Amino acid sequence: MGMTDTRLTYDEKSLLAHMVGKTLDELVHDKYIGPHTSYMSVWIVVDGDVFDVHCEVEPRSHFGEVDDVAVVSVRPSGREAMQSHLAGHPLSTERISRIICDIKVVEDTQEMLNGDEVEHAFAFTSAIIFELDGSEVMLAFGPWFSEDIGIERGPHASSKLPAAIDDISEEDRQWYRVNRQASSIRERGEEHGG
Image (cartoon, rainbow, N blue to C red):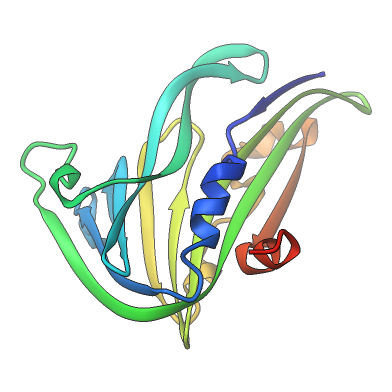
């Protein structure tokens, strides 16, 4: 069985774990397709520190063939790096100023079947959800070839995440099995002494 895994790394999840209990000051992003979609980057400012939540295509195996696949990453950044990746799309700053109670990382695995056997699997990060006191901020990624980052805010923002199977056409769904897992970063940190 072939496996392509573009999920966040251990170090990236550890970086997120250190944000729990701190203040999400603001989101900075371009307004690519309206106010709720950014292209390639959303910068989050947590207790004054800047982090780039980045989504960029890289050549990877995708169900047995090399293709451009979107890979999500989280990395320290700085205000000087905050520049739109698209000419003519100015950056927008959204003040949040709320404590991060937890962060959930949503990961999907799509398995391509040959009969009952898994021929290839593709695991990826679908969303990062910042749980705030009485509200949420969700950064959603996908489909697999897109560098767009969807931004949702509100008490039920995570309910707007598309179903895990939505990336697969109706006619092809008989050949796939899809699994979605949402993991609490706070619980992960407690398990690892964080």
